[in-house]
Image (cartoon, rainbow, N blue to C red):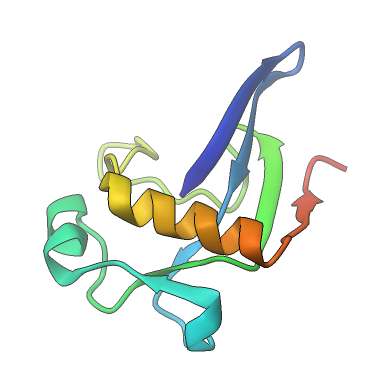
Amino acid sequence: MVLAATETGAGLSVITAPVTTKHHEPEQLVVVPPRVARHLGLLPGCGVVCNDLDRFIWVGVDVRARPGGTPYFGQMPGRLVEEVIRRVIADAVARIDRDG
């Protein structure tokens, strides 16, 4: 999930939080409601991991393409985005630069 984007000389720099179905502690995860997951074509039971931020030039190696090749799944509802950002800020999560 893209949380921030800034245009740079090297391209679009983004800060992301992963969306996954892997188990995480509840305090680290914002669950994507089933209806939203279905609408976006995400797997049931997925969530946004709030303590694992990455920064990279778009499109990074961990970004998964959908059928047709686009990495864009759609827009998350505002409440879900606000909850993820609130958790990131509350936990003072540091990002990991993936561009070397």
